[in-house]
Length: 416
Ligand code: MN
Image (cartoon, rainbow, N blue to C red; front, side, top):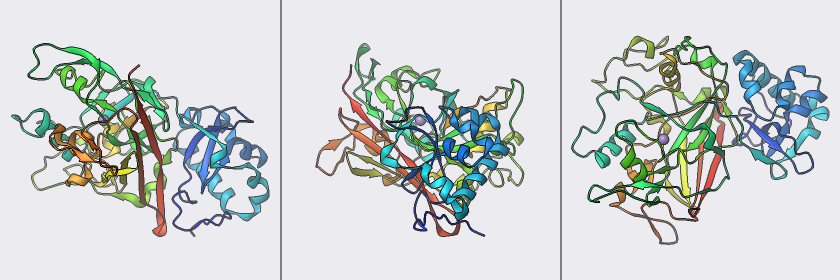
């Protein structure tokens, strides 16, 4: 039987009973940070509600981040979600639970996790080949390793911020191909990257691997992630060790973490074509074909939208991503690297085959050669000071419902 809430939400509400994302909140009168669960346009104070209803396992929700809950592992995650679904569905709980529901505009949302290690991948073939054509026009569009392993790099966890956090334009070194020498100054090619971010729990010890089949016990949930990128700093510094200061100044994530189980109806096969290589056995799971798609290595039918100062500039589809989150986690740990509660990994920029699906300004304006226009007529190749970027996303839920991921926003402030 399908659960319905006594809150009587429209069946297509993006934060209905099938969603129940977790966040961290406080209020003006009660400033202690604690776990909240969004339903409709309300936030359930999960900590206080669990005390009132006598759910002892909810003690973990009084923490100022999701990390202790993440540390309990997937059995506790399922139990917590089952309890939340029950108390928000069964009218018998209404009198106990209803007073712990707060209007969304009465709460302040905070960074939901204490970010452990942060990795960013590169899983869109369309993005990777667009970047290849722009940055390396004389080389093959896709690197030779690209279809054999999910390419990634370690980022800076301390500058991951919650939606709504503004940041200053970074300064750094840059040198164009024609410049005689590098110069220092504010980035003149500040960009976005529309991505999903995966939140990890159930810590492991060094030497242990997490297989594709086991990844579901460790990937807790998903956020929208904006990997702000300074292309001029990146282009000059990235050979041979990869992205560094061009990306480490700020990474924004949404305040609501959507549990992976809420996206079961959005699971799809990964895109594979005739001629794609077989992947090594550690990148296959049960029910996975030679090319590494199927079974536990699934993709997601998530639709994103990116707006700049209110103008929608692109609509990337996550369904085009080549590597599954399960494969990314298996790859990350195959050398024995441990995972920590609160680890975060980004999918890489999401770009589709069409121009209107490109997930970065670099691609939308093709390296600066093809400016695009906002609704007020002003042209853009890269971000200007004062620009506000908002990313939203939705996915199909069960029984024709919709799951709307929490949005991620941020504004560019002038260089300090
Ligand atoms: Mn990225």
